[in-house]
Length: 148
Image (cartoon, rainbow, N blue to C red; front, side, top):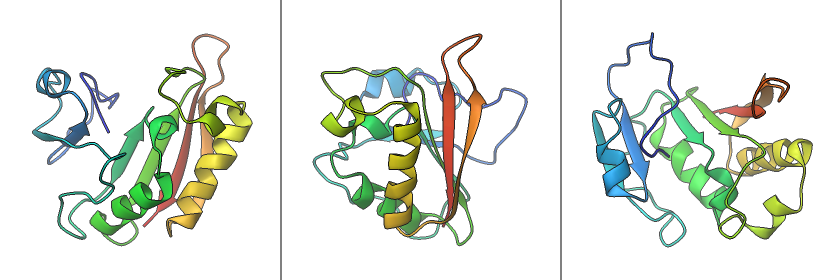
């Protein structure tokens, strides 16, 4: 899940980065993407991707907008190779009019617990979370990571 920025480290090279999003103009403006596609996961949770083809997945500040997150995360697991990480990152910001009600009713710890539950229900193993930024110098950033 991406937009005009992927939030990937500039000093790391990847063999290929495939982006997904809701806005073709934003995806086209993202210099890190080798390819991309527009797909509304709230309308169709099935990804138009082959099984077991990706070495990792990243959902950056998008989980709060998913209406069927377990179905979407199960699809992500399907397209990942065995043991591949899926990282779901989020902060305390969102577009309240677009975020699902449960997300709006929880705090950061609740968000982490909710995403962990989504990943577990979608079949991910070794689910853990990390605080990437505690919010003291900028927005907080949390990552919940599961293995396919």
